[in-house]
Image (cartoon, rainbow, N blue to C red):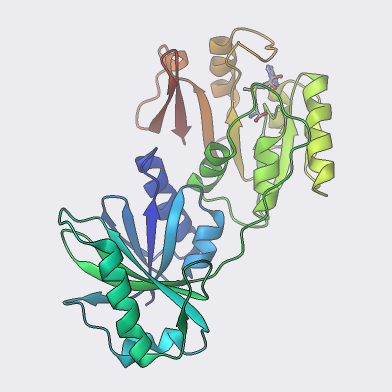
Length: 315
Ligand SMILES: C[S@@+](CC[C@H](N)C(=O)[O-])C[C@H]1O[C@@H](n2cnc3c(N)ncnc32)[C@H](O)[C@@H]1O
């Protein structure tokens, strides 16, 4: 079974790791996971490019060729360079040892040049060969050049809009698959709907503020996306709950957006109508759930600044 590696950004590391696990299990429920600090190794039928294409916090990823016992590469390991014209070697040192990285990269390049016709190219090569050192074991892997994924365009922004990576991570944490439908009952500028559609997931949005609905619709239209947006209170979602598979939303904070009532009251009312048997990821200001009994649900805390820490809650 192929093994992939993912080096994750250390900001929000727990979220980043859980996102990779959720995506790999979504594509192949028998995937096996190994975590070494911010390195995640996945053994799965699914290709690393598919997971990387959806994930929010991946810095480097690729396929593992083999575990290494020493710094020896031979022809057999370099089949991956067969059709490549250019390559570069990169060392990723997650171990506590110090290495002279430029020297090591260049001697690896020299070693590979003996077996391959491919030429070293430092920028944008066809293949990048990685040597990953950790305190537990070392890996030898590679990645191919991948085209940057197209980000959705947002022509109209608004101060309360949510960061796209946090939005995307919520969609991924609840394992929304291509072809399924997500509902955002507080859709604002449409960030959830845009991220979802960019991953092949359909969307339904609600917002009680007509201006926000217009902004969402404009942002969807410019991308040629087809999510539906309704100008009404979030409670209306109960009437269409058979039409979606999961809810991903960011509740009002009571600052830059209009609110129908106090944010804690909205949260309380929202919990009362949450449909059963739907996957749910919601974000809200941390203190808001103090009075709600939410035992046994997975929560992540996202620090923004000293007066705002947000909770992502997964149900
Ligand atoms: C924090 S914002 C959502 C931002 C959104 N995630 C984005 O990226 O633009 C909360 C939204 O909830 C809407 N809202 C407030 N009360 C509502 C209610 N009772 N029903 C539906 N929407 C409501 C506000 O108009 C606002 O657009």
